Figure (cartoon, rainbow, N blue to C red):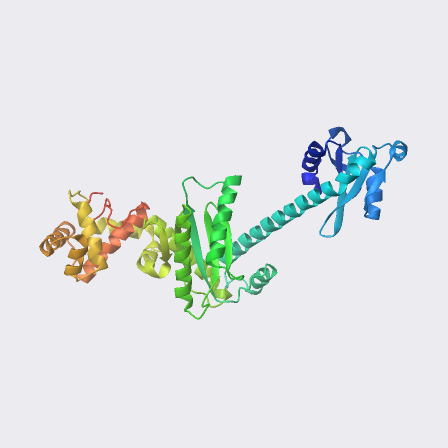
Length: 402
């Protein structure tokens, strides 16, 4: 660890105090020096310093005898272990006052580096754990190794949890530079504020995606409501920070065997929300039952459904017909409510529904026929993967061309 920052410390300290500075490893070999010609040399006083654990003074006579420069040498320790030394050249009486100061700064820098490395290692271990959860197959392996892996990281996977998959989008694409790392840190801090329990698992996956495996049923409320409430609060917080956030949410997992399924569902819900272009928000998979079923169908079946159901010729009013039909699906058999939401007269609504029937051969007032038309529209979106806001025209909306 010291070797990685030794040169930086030596040059920085020397520039401040105006004296030569070297750093050695635990064998007394110079690994950082304000005078690069000293790199790789063995520094005798450093060995004495490491053995005594105290500041060592080298006067002029000792310096000539040992073929080194006069000055002082202090040990450098991290977590109670000596990892090397720091020596300052110059008249001992003059440079001794700098010894402890530079030693303290070097050790602070090393502790910060150790903390950063430890944090990065833990983050990587948690990412690996999430990937292992996603890849877990109870038919092929037992749950014990996964539980052990979680326990090593302080995560009790036996607790009931729910998975969320989060994607955020800002003004610039995600990357791996220092600014991107800082942005990811701010997002993770928002995740910690929304889900602060020590057992809430929050992991950055890269590419602006995050995994949350959070506890269910806390503080006396139902688990689903509580998680959903916190998730919506998180999305609002991220929006305030300038991020658009999209979150898929799986079903609750009572134990570790159900957690891989919940995570898979969260990813599927996120994918569906993005493919269907529903905009930033929370996507519980329970709200995507139809879309999920269609997604599992063979592409050839989706193609046939679209081809056999939607007309192939264009209509000038396809946009308003699409909006009308989707609004009708959201409030079926309630013409007054649909007309009010669309700011239409009920007669105009009736005309549009009749026009949809003439163009498609399917009656929106008949549940089975309307459902088939709805399935075809969703299948078209899934097949093309073209994001669309609810009510935006689609090439295969009622009355649309191919």
